[in-house]
Image (cartoon, rainbow, N blue to C red; front, side, top):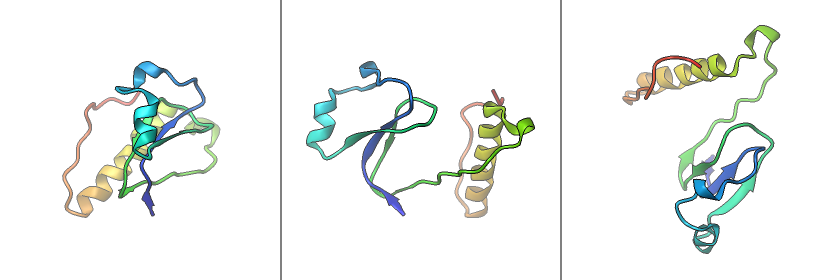
Length: 95
């Protein structure tokens, strides 16, 4: 499913310094802010972007978020490679 244009922010308060324009600027373009109960900072989703939200219970020994995200990213990179799309990390170490 394609994602509609939107700004998403996690459980922490919106830091207006994260925005390059006032929030009203985005709203006038039909890009609205959505608050979610999740970690992380602000993200922008655009029209046509494909998004995957994995939701599952992690075992106690799998709850290192840095390692989990690194492994999840690895799955994405391998999938893209299988599809003939070149992608790479901006960093190599897991947190």
